[in-house]
Image (cartoon, rainbow, N blue to C red):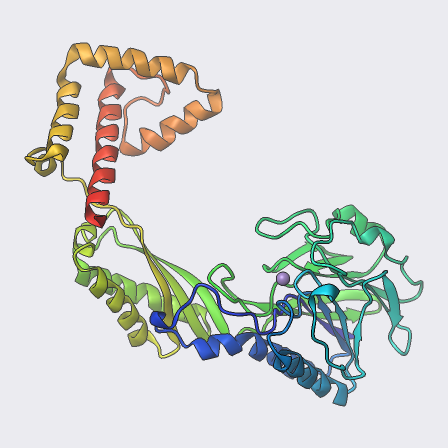
Length: 430
Ligand SMILES: [Mn+2]
């Protein structure tokens, strides 16, 4: 027996944080949740699976118009004609009270009720499916506790939209413990809500398939449904099958070795080539993150517009399927001590005064006392971290977290460099 488990399709989810000014193929992005669903149905038909389950958030919210529901009806009708049933629970995004529009569904689609958990059987009673839809978006109760007991002699599947034990970046709806799920004695828990794929347990399997199609830069990488194969009542495979048509990717570019804008453009092109490979032939939308302490940084402020256009051009050169969602410039300027100290302005004066402090024995002794007093008050755990983060990485002397004569020079230089880089960076942005 084989079935497909999906969740969080968010059909016709609107694009957020993007504008036409970004030079993005917005129509193709808007279509992507529909295409991903069509890919799942294509697979179900080609592989002649026994049924599919959808564990909540099929819709992103109530439909903008009937075309969203109509698209779903068309896809399910394709399965119906092949005799493949679909079992659905509603989640927080498509909770019963949020869906103000409705369409009559094909006969193969079973939507579990919101009032209480229900059990349905495959016609040959080899499989029992248990599920309950969300009546409202914010379900704070543990729904698992009232799920029916496992049906004897069946392969038991539980459909549930839940944050499980709580997941970062996901509202804590219908929370439950792993032990609550295991206690039901089911063979497979088809969960939804968490948009990154996660297998919580095997034998019995407890799976978040992740969403079917990434919708923005926080939903990066491969998006898939889970194809489950059961032999003799036992799960023998629960593998992700990519369904996404657009792949969202974060692409860091280390520009430490880039001397100027041309070098930076070369490095960006090389990084984008790798990103393009990760998209495996799909449309790729990339967030470029330029980073590193780089000589090129000084060139960026004056040529900001050209830099942005060069990023888009680099993408276009790599592939007609590659687009830039946004460029984050996180590079830091290189601090040239002699040149900065020689400046006639306040920045030069500041650097000179810190350097003077480093040469003043009396000031050094006072600073040493003050810093050691401060360090002695830190909890042990922070002492080590302070040393690692602030001084050791700059090649500081002893490994002791207290400050002695040999490490004081390093501390002062580290403070001066940090100060200078912050100020020079702000100057570049002005
Ligand atoms: Mn969702």
